[in-house]
Amino acid sequence: MNARQRVDGQQAWILHSYPYSETSLILDVFSRERGRLPLMARGARRPRSALRGVLQAFQPLELGWFGGGEVRTLARAEWQGGMPLLAGRALLLGYYVNELLLKLLAREDAHPALFDAYAASLHRLALGQADEAHLRLFEKTLLRELGYGLALERDALSGEPVQAQRRYQYLIERGPVLAAADAEPRSCVYGKTLLDLARDDCSDGQTLAESKNLMRMLLNHHLAGAPLQSRRVFIELQEL
Image (cartoon, rainbow, N blue to C red):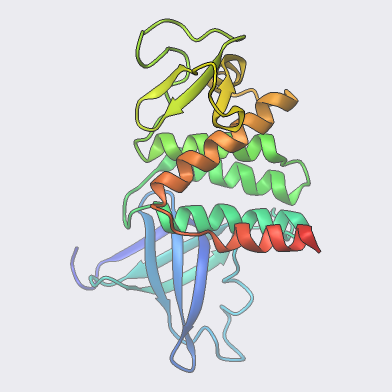
């Protein structure tokens, strides 16, 4: 891209921001057409900057930027409206989703379907409609978009259809296999859970509990053991 080439009219969300120099910010944004990338917002921290009230996480934005280096320069930002501010538990869950994207998405790798799923999840959070079932489905979409789609409907060893009443262990990057009789219960999921996930249906209580353990195992693997700060904060608040 030409060093001064300008990109405009980009739907985007701010995943994270931090101060740069006395007056500027570095933004980590997730855009629909360009993926995740860093932008420098010059002067955004000045008291009279028009950007101060615009550059907020969990708010839909239309951005423009220019530059050819690793960090582009923000040229314009417009709030697109229609999104209540997140608060309480919804805010914590929003930080969790953002942290997943920050740690798992490669730079400048566009994922329009994931962008749309992220926007839908934030709208549900803002309206108080999102629950753990929707988070599990977002995590499933994230893994699929990253190239780690879940095999859910066939035994990875035998090729036989998964049976709802049988217990399975999930082999990372392979899929489910029938669990041994003495397998640790917490490491197993029932076939019904796998089949429900394949249908994007986490409404059943057992499916929800087992899919949470399954997604945590898979995400921890792909995070290579990197801890999630948002998860730690959520646990600490629950303990309080």
